[in-house]
Image 1 (tube, rainbow, N blue to C red):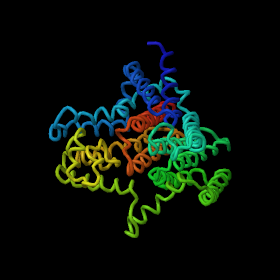
Image 2 (cartoon, one colour):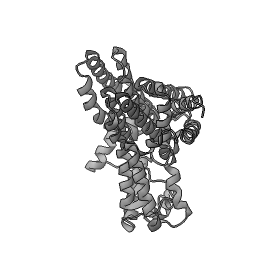
Image 3 (spheres, helix red, strand yellow):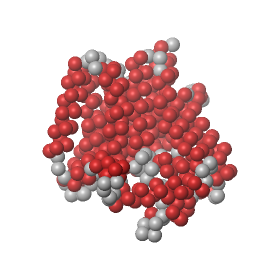
Image 4 (cartoon, one colour):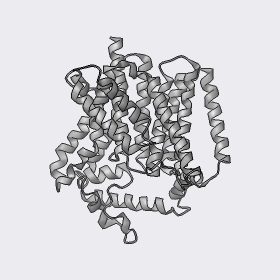
Length: 403
């Protein structure tokens, strides 16, 4: 097999998967899937052991759970959809193999730079949507909340660029989360704003521990916090106001001091229906092709448009209805997969980069999945699979270098 082919395949996967998701999500995703699929076919004989890498074992265990429980929940061929929905995650070893084939692309700053460019592109596209096209919420042709979530993930994942160099300029990558959050604000989506807070809380202790001795880090971090505070009080607009009310909405729901708006009320209706459907099949669920049928009896009459929902705007609810406790266990394993990859990285710098990437990937998909489906939505699932594979590839290369 020619070694020339993996190079364009890896280039396609990286550029389409890390730069273009906010710009052309449903075009880029097919390029990513195609590149990973061909990469798997070409490179599996050479890197067969990659299939058994630590992070992937959790994916296969989650898959095994669905396979074992399928006979107990399957009502028709449509219940095989769960395997199709998770296909981009199953292709993740292709990303690791392509990266191992050309280690030059495994540098954290290259991956971080592509993510940073993707977040910056999302901001530019969002500004164009609102101030040129006059749209009420930025989306770039995609669903606004999906656009905001993808931009947010890329913005935070750009923090990988902090590793692999000692230059003070690496701290420019701290702008990534700000860009991703700003794009989410332009989308007017409250879920990504909540996720931004959770991801910050998850990552900041590690970043502070690793970089606090660096004067530039302290300056940039403090300046960023001050800038966010000033910007939050000065920026006006429907999109900003809607998104920043996320925490007020949550506080009102918790305290009971206010009524939820239409979008939040719809989600609460779906979540309650999910709980009732879960009670009817708590162990094995209803199958992935019957989310709507399982929840329809519990949808109030004044919400007819929520009948036959393909998903319930919440990953926990989706997996609970699809697979019951078994489905929730599979979901937990998918989220845990990125967190164990760092253990196989032997060089300290790569170990830190892979650990941070895993923390961001897990916390990001968990928090974004609280307000909208992430697994099963093709661009989001493909981004998870691609980044999971890249982290595994980086860890494997670092292990080989150390040996």
